[in-house]
Image (tube, rainbow, N blue to C red; front, top):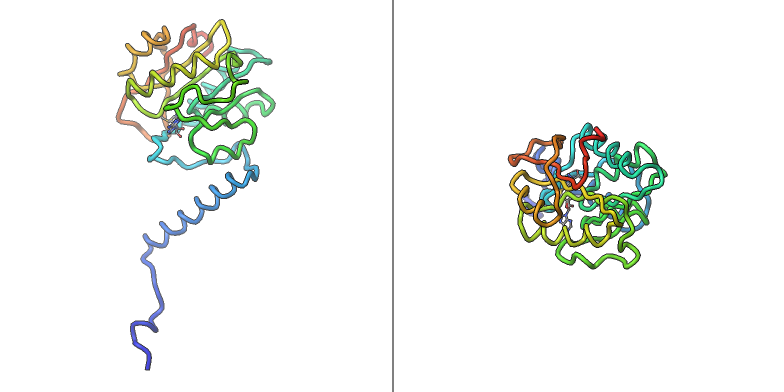
Length: 213
Ligand SMILES: C[S@@+](CC[C@H](N)C(=O)[O-])C[C@H]1O[C@@H](n2cnc3c(N)ncnc32)[C@H](O)[C@@H]1O
């Protein structure tokens, strides 16, 4: 005689079922990325809050993409440091545009040779060929801390060609440090996010970025 409780079918609540489905879907996406299988550059990648991921709204991503592309013109190279949505928006406008995404989240390895693994804590641990090789460097660091911005600034200066064109998107609270480290000034253009953030976010640049609006 079997134990009654062993014979009962296992059932999941709707919430548990949805959570499990989402887990398997994300696992599938991660495996695709790590196996080198190419995914559509335009495909949506879910925000991972553990990695402080806050994606731009569609409108902001497109606007920023147009502005950085205009800033470097057709044959320029753009580095998107911790800003994968910007990279995606650039490629959606012109898939042949020369852009690179420097990212910690390995899901973006799906972008192939345009992806460079990057951890802001090791600011110079990027391939040697990246040194002074971008016409414009755009960064949106994961944390609103002096340590994170200071280290990201080292990378930005290291990979940018002279004369350096630098754009930063970060909290309004980082204005003073952005000015001190990189000589960046606050822009009129205000970035918006898909999900509203508690902190005020701003753009900073060392050239007239607003003129490209
Ligand atoms: C505030 S979000 C900026 C995203 C940007 N708003 C976008 O839409 O593309 C911070 C970014 O930093 C990345 N990140 C998280 N940890 C990192 C680390 N240790 N080093 C570098 N980047 C990191 C996240 O994956 C995320 O893309």
